[in-house]
Length: 102
Image 1 (tube, rainbow, N blue to C red):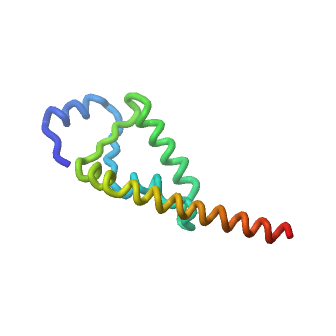
Image 2: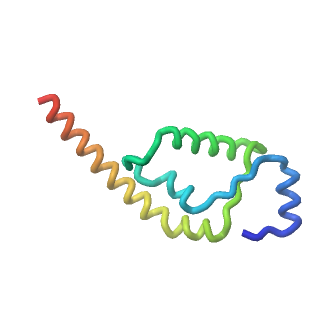
């Protein structure tokens, strides 16, 4: 990402933290939540960042054109995969519950 001097000056004048997001960080938000490596604390951290970004002046988020393109190209597939894995997870949980209660 390359910013001109005027843009850099405006960003500095905002006097707020700047978060430069990458594709993986954004896709991680929608990726499979049933993955054993998911940690609930990360969800809370992500929500805090989102809240700060939506509150004027608390956090400035920058996204490069490359990240935007990659996100556009990959988001639908990641959402579909996450949806399928969640359905599988719920079906297994229901099967386990029925077996345990029997």
